[in-house]
Length: 213
Image 1 (cartoon, rainbow, N blue to C red):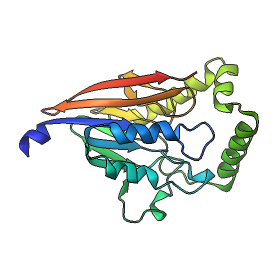
Image 2 (image 1 turned 90 degrees about the horizontal axis):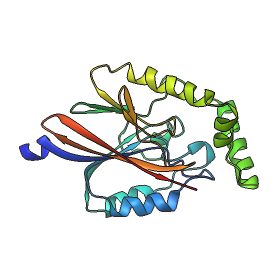
Image 3 (image 1 turned 120 degrees about the vertical axis):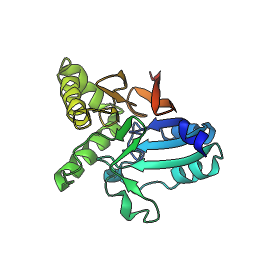
Image 4 (image 1 turned 45 degrees about the horizontal axis):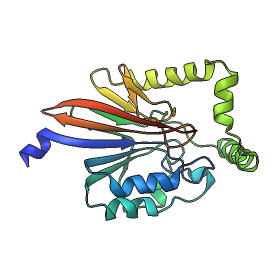
């Protein structure tokens, strides 16, 4: 048991947004069926509860894969009410492992509002009808301003844990360098995740990004 604690492979992914039009659900489920990890961490927004109930096939895929020894689910801002669907699962706001702090990156104190839900539903409806990614369009027409604001969100989240390597999601922008790290997303233009190898309390972070056309 001591050897397991000193050396570990962790896989982290976030922002699949199952139920949304631009989600890569089938590719994600296929990925879950073939990975090997001492610990799998779902770092928020795996589902988009604003757009429908969560899909239990995600948890079935995890349980069927004997290569996953243990797993954790961290709430995101689009699935923060997931507890009521799966009372048997322990959902967390953050997780500390060795020199890592893993959290989705949103303000956990902020409550979902009816207006927030309606804006997500409206955006998804437009994207489905016109096959047009509004999020990516806004990134282009703001000439980097939106990415700059998302960078500030991640910096604020990382600054709360100055002594840790902070692994985030939320912004959909993969990043593999201090002051914070981001596993990116499995929606929009990326299919990205992290493989982390820890040994004797020190982690080595590998970001894997598959760009999508």
